[in-house]
Length: 287
Image (cartoon, rainbow, N blue to C red; front, side):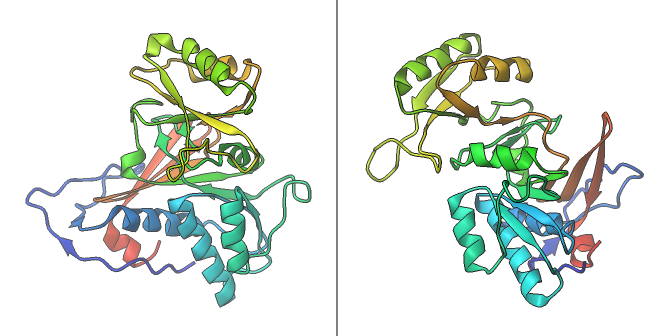
């Protein structure tokens, strides 16, 4: 699929840096002046290259996934993609897709999804994720866990050494009943990690943020590594009143990372992680 990427200017750095690829070293890549939104769009466009006619697609939520949904709609309008069915991960994405005339369905009608494309708030070296700072973690996890392939699209600021390393929120969706009790128990689970938690509130009126599913979100913040993610996940989900958490462990098939020096694609191949890198000159010419 030929792809036209956003226009940008390049300049040669004083000391060119080689990007690592899986097969051989790439030629030096010129630095480019790009905004964070440019990087999100580049990652999204690269992911949409994997979309084929006749697919059932999981449509992600958030500022990066929005670019992918826009791109899919454009290709449908062009006639490049046909017989696409979208499964949105939020009411926000549902409304966006409807406005773009993307045919939609749900997991009841299509329990197996060919491909899901979505952003992430954090990505660790093993491609584990934090998602849900936009509030859609439950539906995202339901749809992306039902996908044969899940491509994550991020800009380089989302890459972290370990889950929680950004010191930003790791969301947990909880039922509204006695939410403060749930908050205290969640924080108690991670006292060794310097955890603090707070109820997410709406910026405008200060009222509790309510998810598409009618629940609240507790945002957890960690000073230190929380250790084994599967153990942490099990401990959270054993607490009564917890609906779901924002750690997406082992779900991503590949991660497309757009950075100032180019695009890096990290893909799981069995137990190994294959890494390919591309300069922006390559992107302008397609892949």
